[in-house]
Every structure is written in C-alpha cells, then in structure tokens.
Length: 351
Image (cartoon, rainbow, N blue to C red; front, side, top):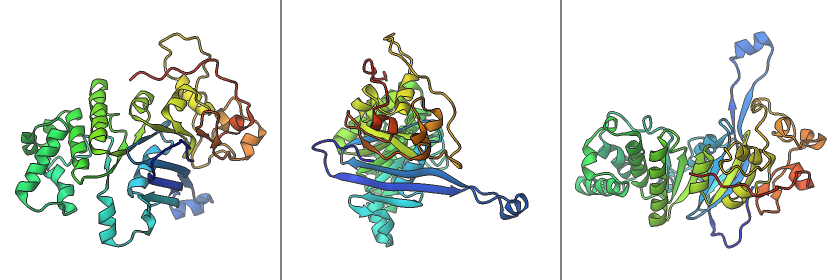
C-alpha cells in the first residue's frame, strides 16, 4: 500500500506483500486425539509500504496488530512467509553470501522497546557500544574504538566516562540513550525503532524523541517507527500507516491521517483521544474486540466492529485505493462513499 505524494525521494526501503505466519498448532499427538488440524497465526498478512531516504514512517495500531512483527521482518530477524523486503534496491531474500549480508546489515540497526532487557548487564557500556564496531570490522585499534565510543556517548547526551559503568547504574532514559548510541556505532542509514519510548516516563519520552529528531537532522537517518502512542507518532512522523489484524488499512502523510482520517478504524482510534478542547465533534467509540488472528473474519478484517459494514464487507477483502485526502485506504465504505463526511477536522494529539 503506497501513499502517492509528489516529489518524494527514491525509496530506501520497499516492502511488497510482506507476510509472516506462525505455526501455533498443538503437538501432533494432541491433534490426532482431538482430531484437529494445524493452526496458523497470521501475524502480518500482505503489507506494502515504502520509506524514502531521510523520512520517518510510523506504524500504529492496537496491541497484537503486527507492528513489531513488521519491524523484525524489516531487519531480518524473521524471514517472510510471503512477499519481499528490499533495502536500497536489494532484495534481502536474494542476499546469501556472508560478506554481502554483513555489508548490508551494518547499514541498518534496531532500537528495542525495553532498555532494561536489550543491554547485556554483564558488560560495561563501552563494550556494549563498541560491539557493532568490532563485529563489522569498522575499527581495530583499541584507542580509536575508545575515542569513537566517547564520541557516540557525547552525541546522545552522555559522558565518555560513562563507558566504564554497567547498565544497572543508569536510569531508563539513559539506558535508551545507550541503546541509541549502540545503534549508531556502525554508521547506519536506517533505524527501526520498536516502541523505543513506551517503557519510559512521559518527560523522558520527550527527551528521547527530541534526541532522535536531532540525530535524524544531523546524520540524515531514515526511521521506521513502531508505536501505539498516537501523540508520539504525530510528533515524530512524516507519514503514518494504520495497522489492523496484520494489514495496513490506511497509509498517508501524518496531517491527512490525523486531521482527515478516512478509514472507520482510524477514526475510532482518534476518537479514543480525550477531547480537551470540548469541540463537540461526534465521536464513535471503539467497540468490540480484535478478532482471533488464527481465525480472522472473511472479507474485511474490521467488519465485525465496523458500524458501516455491509454484505460486501463480509465476503470481499478491500484493496488499498487512493482517498480524497491522498492517503491509501483499504475500505469498501470509503470507496463507495458510504462514510459520513466529517463535520470538522480532528485536532492533532498533543505530545
């Protein structure tokens, strides 16, 4: 699903029909006794997007919608069950030589959600940050490596002297700064950020987001940002993709997504934000529960919760099509003009 915006740079990352299924079946003996078949969890089921150099694409949605699985597919921690993921024009599935894999892998890194779990508690910070430098063979002289580690620590707002400390001596926000320094140590072009601020206090979240925006400006970084926090997504993003049950239901620039949402699910997400301005805009609360991804409903996955669903929605899966705002939307109701017009634009969420 590609949002068509004019004058965009050539994409650095391209995902086409990206899918990942997990076999969650019971053991064979249990299945024979109970006379049941295999069960497949469709965590991601046909996702298309592009990320241009220097921009931030954020994926947002409820827990379990497949956001983190997409992040792991993009960096190669999972192999896709279907579809392709290309980086700088190179199909990652076609890269098999170890030297080629190492050459491409050092160009992208990942920042994980939990700064308490993503750092080795037995290593000093200097060794943690230096590990990608050593693994990728970027430097070999210990003095040069130490100087580079000190430079990276200063870049993320810490002191070179912190390289001698252990992770447990730092706060959560400081640990996430260390994670960012480690991610930057191989001079990457692309960072995948899997909810990097969700485990932090609100005040610390703002500091980390400001740091990431400043690093992007200085280094020309490209981000894939995963979050369920709409305010964070609005602050950090250039474009936004809304996921539901393993699929992208809406993809466009952040202004159109947050002020003129088209898909009923996107509207419901935004209606869940408290209306502090008391605008009086009609609100549709999020009703029902997310269906079981092992046995998703036929047709549009959102149809059991959608107030605008009709018979077509229950049998035919919608394909992404351009909407009046320019966003790509997978919704029969939007395509057929069955959704009511917005009385007024939504107010963007405050950070």
